[in-house]
Length: 46
Image (cartoon, rainbow, N blue to C red; front, side, top):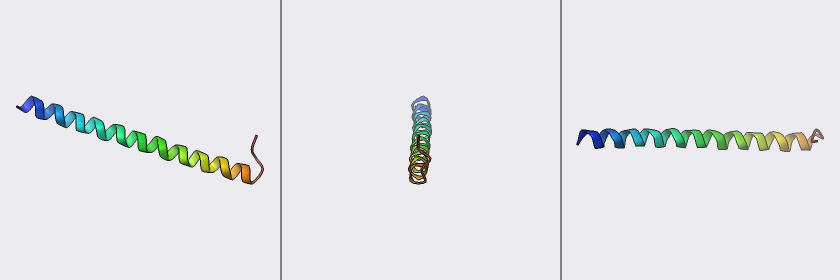
């Protein structure tokens, strides 16, 4: 069944893409929170 194998491979690649995207969004959120904490620490918070 070449079609099933191709579909499974496509879904696996899509899964990796979603995983990498989610990890990058989470990393960006962590960096943003660190910047916010740093800004509050030095008195630049709104």
